[in-house]
Length: 207
Image (cartoon, rainbow, N blue to C red; front, side, top):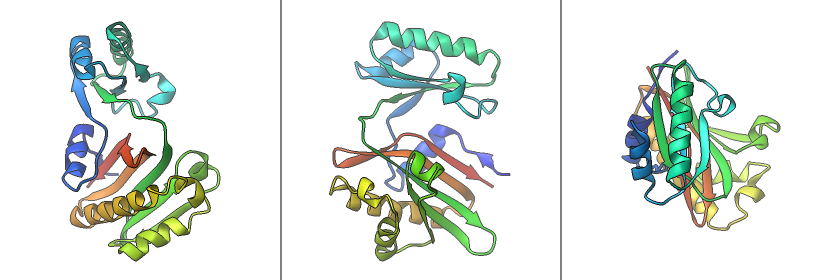
């Protein structure tokens, strides 16, 4: 079992490869959270090794706008955090609605780095509609991964999404090949919206 990389460290490392995640920061007070928001709607999460399913444990607060809501959510998470020490509180901008996809990576003992693509939500969990390739992948491979999905019409409902997903797959493949000590990668979900994308949650596991 590897070690889970700190969220903001993972955020910065992926950013070096042009893989963009939502604007995020750790905060140590309600005042800092309000300052981060700058009038935007934000999400607040409690991160602790003792909390595996944040959303099921009430550790994710969504659609926070205005000082009072943000301060209230911070106080709630601090109370919940008493049983989950050590913990950190992460704030993120809240993204627009869009099409959710996942991109993952892992390491096969025999073949090396693998990259996975799927539509988010029930398409992965229920239908197992995913495409997997050995890294490094080419532009042809990336297009083939998209085309092989049963759910491709949903993913490509916006004609701009095909190019976005292809380029993102190529960047993640490069990242996996150049960072051999990263044994697992999970970008879930990535939200495609308005001709762009945002990785909403990310996880890197290293040796």
